[in-house]
Amino acid sequence: MKKYLASNRLPVHPPWLWVLKTLLLLLGICALISGSMLMLDPSGKSIQFPAGYLDGSPFSSYFIPGFLLSVFIGLLSLSAWFSLWKTPKMALLERLNPFQGKHWAWTLALMSGISLVIWILVQMLMVPYFFLQPTLLLWGLTIVLLCFAPGVRAFYTHRG
Image (tube, rainbow, N blue to C red; front, side, top):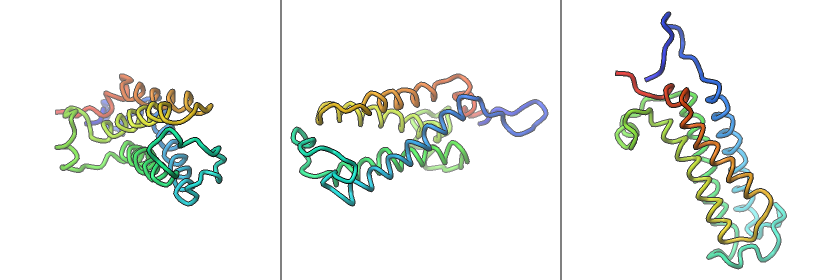
């Protein structure tokens, strides 16, 4: 699975993997904090969302978006970060992994980036523009691109 040096030392972390792990960790923490704040104060006032931001959406309060943010962005990103770090063996997740040549942790990281991109694109359709949207869209795209960096892909490729 991991690329080992000829002397059988520990695997070498590609530099882009450190960046990927950092982006996932920061994203997960920020999304959990923001999502929790939205659930605790569904009006959005605690994070200074103006009244009327949800007018074009199917939500009457920020509770459901906060919950979804916490789970699908926060917990997913933190799970991906932890999995990339520890690369635990989980037979069920390996069987469910659509990328059979890769460790399921790599797939989870890829899903985290894709989830953030989808989240922001849907958000841009439903609520007025605010300055963090392009930043978060770029963040999600960067996670996806880092997953496909040659060193990262090779690091999580199963070796027969």
